[in-house]
Image (cartoon, rainbow, N blue to C red; front, side, top):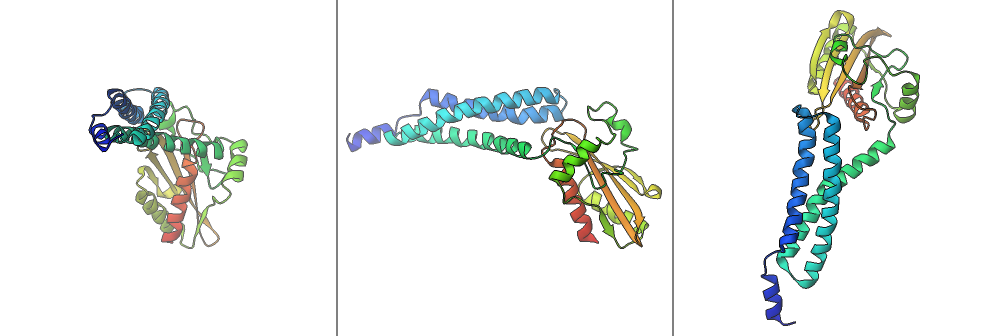
Length: 254
């Protein structure tokens, strides 16, 4: 093949079929994004969102494989337009599929629980938030010994925070730390040493509820925290991560 032939091939427009595959990948990206935001905006139920997301990822994965094969073939043939379109499709598909695959790995590595607390024997109870959870699939009550056993096995590092301050001061520190987490404070009950708050995931808008309890202990105060999802059986470690982040922030501020 002559240099002129290579130049002519390089200057040809991209294959319409490959462009269509790229458009499909982009469409899957939009569908995947809307799967979550649609639930947040109450366009549909989260179960419908999961179905949309699942099929968007399946189709994107297939289109990504086609794009990758086309990219390799175009690179061999020195077809620059197809190289660009094929690479774009493969990269965009990977950007969708790989995080989902990683999330699935995380879900498989953590227990299928959604209620995490620093006190499994006497977990802080939801009071003001309880009515907000009345229609939630996951009830406000603690999930019991099985959940406690699974938490101990998977998240042994989660523990109460001991503060040298008296309960009134410890309560204010606990409240300040909760506010700094960006949570929506639902209830403040300083006389009872209780703070209740809600946190929502950015994409699907899933709401998780948090209750913090401050009690006198050993000349200072003990702070316990509990975080529970309103929907879903497996929280992919989200509640444990939230409790850890809060207790570390509280300890750092002490």
